[in-house]
Image (cartoon, rainbow, N blue to C red; front, side):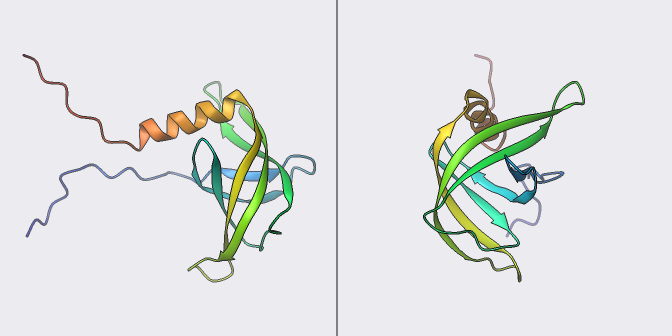
Length: 119
C-alpha cells in the first residue's frame, strides 16, 4: 500500500466569500462553481425558489478587491455535515463574463494536466 502522495493536493488558503450584492452582507462561502450554477455553504438556510443578487469578492493582482456580480435561483437547500451550516444549490440566471472567467480559472487550477514530454 502506498504511504506517500503521488499527486499534489491543492489546499485553498481561504474560501471565496459570497455577499448579498445590495446590502454587501456576507451570505456564505463558495462551495463549488460550474458554468451553470454553484453551491453555497452558509450559516443560514436559503429560501428555495427565491432569486438572489450575489457578489463574490476576490483579491486582485493589484491588491484591490475585485467584485464579480451575478443573479442566481436557489434550487435546493439542506443541512451540511458541519453543524449549523447549510449547503444550497443555485442555478445561474445572469452571470457576468468575469464569473465565467473565474469558473474557467478554478477548473484549470483544480484539474490534472499531463506532463509535457519531449519527443
